[in-house]
Length: 455
Picture (cartoon, rainbow, N blue to C red):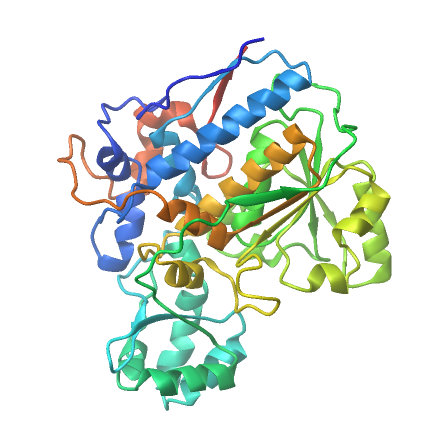
């Protein structure tokens, strides 16, 4: 069987005369979402749709190679810049078309600046850290309280208005802000003007005996394979989502009561629209991994899995005795995939590794869109399929390695003239028949697979 990759097109199944990157960012919602912070559609400072499409194309080729090895009669795959762009805005599109009223997207947001003009990002996932940090500066209690929700959910809305708070930090020197952050437990990362480059996107290691060749039940490269996923937020769940779109059965481990992200508005039916965009079609089991019985249950599930994927914080795998060797004893040859924030680059005790602080450290052009999270999910899925194809048993990827891969692309120098209107309403995009072939409706509007395979 001859494998081939069709040329990555610009528009793909989207029925619009898209001439290039600029048109794709305009028509497919990237300018709209990225521009929420500025109050107007704004292009990203890099060819993001092209970068994501190139990674999806390489992932598609790996999947075809795996399909051939498994006797699945597929011989070509295609993707496009438009499909890559829609994948990037998928969560925002789902939220805009959910049952709940549309959230307001007032402009504003980090990075912050010190009195010397030094740009930096902060991160906290605990409201007590947020309160301690601002209390040290004597910030207005009402502004601090009102600012927590937009700050915590900025990854989901792409904007973060914080009236009065940015001005508080701008009145103080960087040294003191850094000291206060350290005392309060707040992660603080300066915005770098030196792009991090030359990190491998993912690292494969270990060797398999080639046991994982599940029986194909559909005409997709990963049909018959099982992925056991224990992930939160965007990067890990998106990796699992892409593996499902490639045909795998994905079983999510969630804590008792379910992943808290399931209940974050806006809601689509009985599930958060944003959560639905990343986890639709996955099976779910609730397990308390903090208990010995829960860990035994997870290891039992792993005995029939081909991949174990997690994005736990550093030290969790060791604390729970769910390290690569532990999984390998339960299922020899299983692919153990860790999608982290920083990888090993910042040592064993790195700061919080979320999208925006990784953007700041790595020198990626700043955006309140989850551009590194999304690309990190694609990179993680690429590494997993590469491991399945090459017989490796370990895959380590990170948001930092994904950012490095993004930085290897030339920065946007000048914008081409637009030949299409700029999308300024995701609900209108969802209803536009020219996008019908790449969207599906399931309580909200979701983006379909970014690949088209042919036999």
